[in-house]
Length: 472
Image (tube, rainbow, N blue to C red; front, side):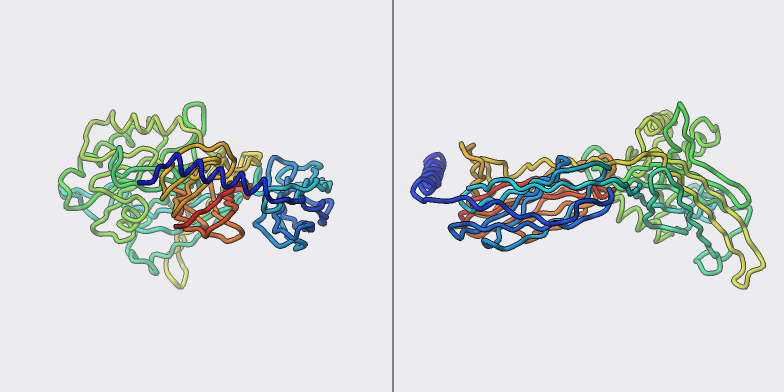
């Protein structure tokens, strides 16, 4: 059996010995080229090049002067490398570039001053879904009573971007004759517009831990009927209008209890809320939403604000739902206004048109903070054998024997867009959904692991770990 501590001491000793016996000279000071002025919020390209007296491979590290840094993979001595960066705020920044050879010897720093006198708005990115609903549904529940606010289909389901301190308008025409429901009536139609935050959170369709899904919380919601307007409610008592999607089925004997409780709460007008009955057994669009996005466990289930709260079962006690509604009302959301206008238009060749106009106003100044990255595996200065953490070592490099699962925890206030795992310039994984991890089966020798992340506003951050891989 392998003695792990002796193996670790042996590996460290070999690394130290190799550093003592090999004479090494650091790379020359790099030459840096690129623009010296520009506009905040736009991407710019810079080039660094340096020679190593011993002909060793080198990598460059760019410190951008805004608490962000980028290190390249290894390149040959004298080979230039391009790096791109976006400064999010106006100001004057000093880029500092160093070259480090494969033995760890570092050059003198080179600098380049850049000025960003102008700024560019990036904005809020979210997912807008527009629900077409019948207040008195064409489908009956288990008790043979019509559902309330029965979902028909989406008039719109797509991403939207709203620049900071600006408005965006979206106009959609829903044509009943071109849908599966040409017989809808003007006096029995409602439109609900719900705006979902782009940042995923861990949710469970059967709390506390079964049927996990990525929950995208509601930032704003509004509803209106033909000839009327609606708006997202924001005041001292609520941060937004709460939206509930109810998973239900016509054959479910427990579903009427949940539906009745929510209708009773809605009719009291005590809380700013709308809900929709997603009748999964008769509506394939509703079922796909429930199964694919919420990983539905069973009927009935109420998903509050995109999964911020989840209630399962035929509970008739209204207080249970009111507690969840009150919780959602107090949660922090992106600062938005949302208005909705619905018109019923006739006289067209295609028949009736339901014209839907959504206006979104972004009230926030803008997020310029990059994502927060915590590298969970491998950690600096640890020995890993076949994906197991063994012991802490008195070095900065992580020693990896065999395969290892790379793991990172990434968070951001405006939402994480994607996380990129790169080793020596090779992209292993470009991941858009948590958990952020991938299996790495590296070749023998020294490697540089870079985990980079973008948020929804284009801010970028990265963490770097040096690896020494022994692949058996």
